[in-house]
Length: 232
Image 1 (cartoon, one colour):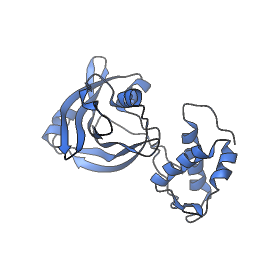
Image 2: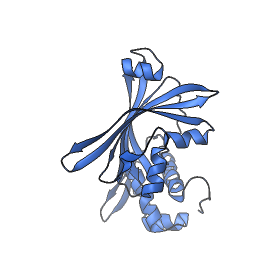
Image 3: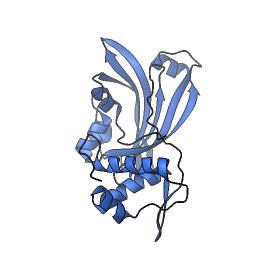
């Protein structure tokens, strides 16, 4: 099976192919093909297969047993969360103009560890009307990203800086979705009423090697809607 050259990386295509195979053809506990067999099937290197399997393991779809191989852990559909894009990337993708307002920015010091806490109101500019979309809270290690606090993230994209200046690619994320009610601050920023129900996501963003890039919390406004890609 030769993978197509598309907007999705080879790794993402492999993950989706194995994911669909698990959803449609596999049972819990069933052993999956070996890394070598997948590499031959997809005509890629074993290292690419290994990274794809790590993504599936983070999704809790498979489990790896040392010396035995990879096994199906669960076969329930999962939301597609690969190729995690920043807000600015998504805005550009749909032809909108992203607008960022810094609500809070500080460096938190805990012994030798320094963390950048960044809280932003993310908006789209449409016909000179600002539409609030999310309130984002980010916690990023300054021990890993030295000097990141110097950038003006009301004007620059966080993920673009991480990719371009630090040569690190945010790749996958594990999110926990929950319902929250708007307090006065959220109501003011997201143009809703106090106690309105909102959707909030919390999780950790990893790079291509599985290292933590960001601990994130995103609260979505009532202007946001979601298309979820599910394996059926």
